[in-house]
Length: 573
Image (tube, rainbow, N blue to C red; front, side, top):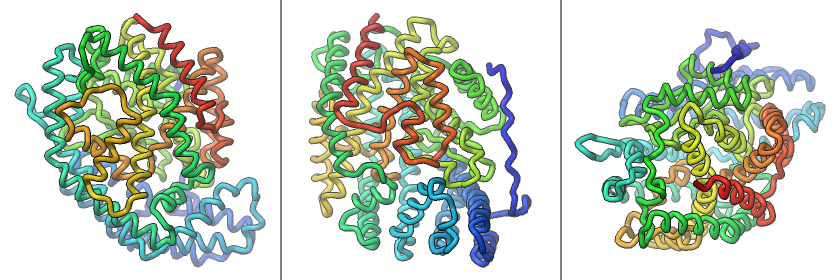
């Protein structure tokens, strides 16, 4: 366990009364009106005004985040659902035009020229972009999308199957895909696949409506396509569609052949004529599945030890999260799918959500979300609230690097041989996830480049991309499951065009990992230094601070895949 103790600084309000509540619009609006009416007579006044705005926005944000967390922790609780939807319907739509007034007051202030251009460059760029995109007419559409997001999560969260006499969620079925009994794996896989297909029409209905709303939003904002709008909305100032497409091409050329080679080695080791979907998670040598823990408390305890090995202070920070109920780790019926880290902005503290079921991947998920949490804690002292957040492409460097930095200290979970198996699975997973990232990204580009497409068109496009980027798995007789496999990728539904970030970040994380193989202290030190910057610098500079290049081309991919290949060769049993 951590040998040091983490005591976070208590950031008390400098303007808002500590007893103020922000649960209703009537409680929230007067504070923003005060800011709009406050005299600003100097650059110093303007900066103080920004700090107070950040304090207020953090308090309001935390109210919404707490409701969202409560809802995702139990999607079948009507009270939690109602509280979340009340914020979405009753507060956010009224807040957006007021925030636009606030933004305009800042951008139009004559005192803005007196602020440091170096310090405020990133902030100003974002504010100007958001003013360009803002349309009051889009607020009802954005509210409708948020409601559809919640409906998608409710549909997914309600999915269960009955297996071996017990009702189980799809996440709880995942361990059975690692069992050495092939017929058992097949039964488990087919049961979940069939259950997902039950809701395919409802999910397609939701998505058709999402597409329609997104296209309306883009048109209202003056864009020819939702793709153009999404890139601006995601504030992709340092790359565009051509670079994304080139990244897809590089993955197809450099990574896909390696991924297919690994799958062919798996097929050969399993001794089967064709690799089937239920064959990709089992140990190819027939060894028992990796089962790192049987209780989530053991997961938390072991992961804390890993963080302490990477850096004692990080271990102490994670211990603080454990002690202060800032984790919800176990899977259960009614819980939303996936995992995330969010920040309680007023307290400046992270919260980690995941669906642990006792498999090896759960350890990596908690390492991943822990990396996000450390990022939030590293930048919590930044006085400008906007700079306590980083671009997603670098947020994911924080998380993916932690997966790799923590991958070689698994002694609380495994013996040496099993620890090597886990490490190998991580590296192989990186090789296979990059083509999947390219598939999801290319699919989203296709969707919004083909307005008016049919569901059959969509399925055909998905299958074509799987042919290009996928592996050697045989889907004979499982065509419906393959054609609708994108339904389980929640980013396509909830966060359009948010997925290539994982690929870009993976390259940054691999550069940090490669350095750590020869200079672990230096790699960790630069990693932590970069996290502390938050979002105060442009994306390429954040990568550089961590000792990495912001580059995602064939020439940057090749040496990283070579490094993974060499490491995998050393891990062969």
